[in-house]
Length: 226
Image 1 (cartoon, rainbow, N blue to C red):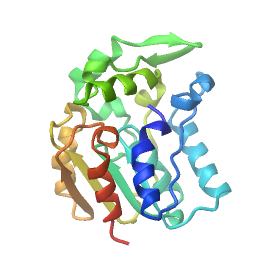
Image 2: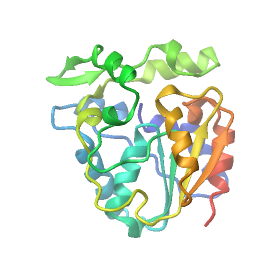
Image 3: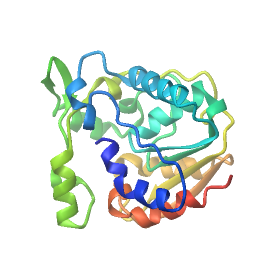
Image 4: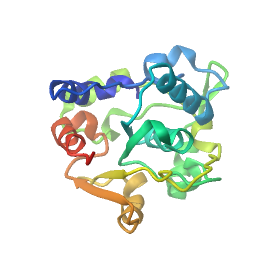
């Protein structure tokens, strides 16, 4: 996916008077032409930190959805002074030394590894079939599917490095998609609920809620304690 997935959320937050930035990651989405073997989580982290510093953004509500939650967690680990509140939407809480494939269920990892192919000399996971997007509206699902691009496997296999506990002392909110629950994220819901420093907010929407349920997501983001 890319920054385009935030289109409906950006519209709602901007209408409420907020300054909103949706960032495309190198090698995927709007920047798919930049796919290369060098693209991994460290590259995406560096790109995001560089953007925050160039734009001099401070005290932001930093939001990461699904895979993007990993990069948001890494950014908060490195530059907490720029983050006022970290929001994870149906993603994972990063753990030092662990990769995404090391965190999610082994049977899902095995299935995904069988799908790996090479594009531009880079091992990638192909984009999801339209029927697996957990988006009930068939037109919206088809529109979403047309925009998808492959994703570098290195982002899933390379262990991450954290220098501080998850969240790095910043206020945190976890938005859990519960209708239906996404198998990759479901186990994280239980773990987050017993973490006293994380504000847990379940919503009745599928995993790709930023597309399928923008009103619900925007409402939650507008209610983030500041």
